[in-house]
Picture 1 (cartoon, rainbow, N blue to C red):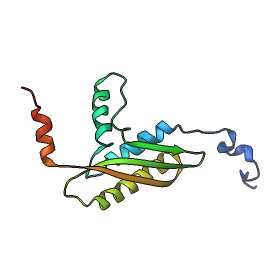
Picture 2 (cartoon, rainbow, N blue to C red):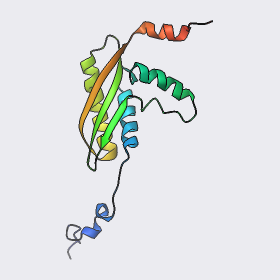
Picture 3 (tube, rainbow, N blue to C red):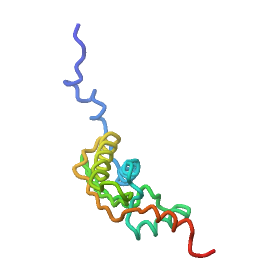
Amino acid sequence: MTEPSTSRNPAADPAARGRTTIADGVVVKIAGMAAGEVDGVHALGGGLARTVGAVRDRVPGGRSSVTRGVKVEVGERQSAIDLELVVEYGLPIVDVAGAVRENVIAAVERMTGLEVVEVNIAVSDVHLPEDDDEESEGRVR
């Protein structure tokens, strides 16, 4: 007795029974979360994007900070990702960017099945320790 072969019957293959599409916003969120998980990444987005984003984050329905600084192009089988980062002072920027690139590629490919053809990273700022003190004190008392 022989086992039935699915290679001769394409209808037996579940992938042949429909189509899956993945929205750009899904890839944006996955990439943003993966980038934020890397040690040395202080924030996503540049100065103006972070300032506007901080206001949006306080407004109900505002765009989440995980998507700030992330842009993607998604095709049927491939995606390309652009990230804008703020890196912690004192860390090798090239190493942080490399770790971000690896983590983003791994997460997007594992979760979506899309091939990531490129991850472009722009480091727009370096976060200094004294920046936290200035933000917490405020200008007006």
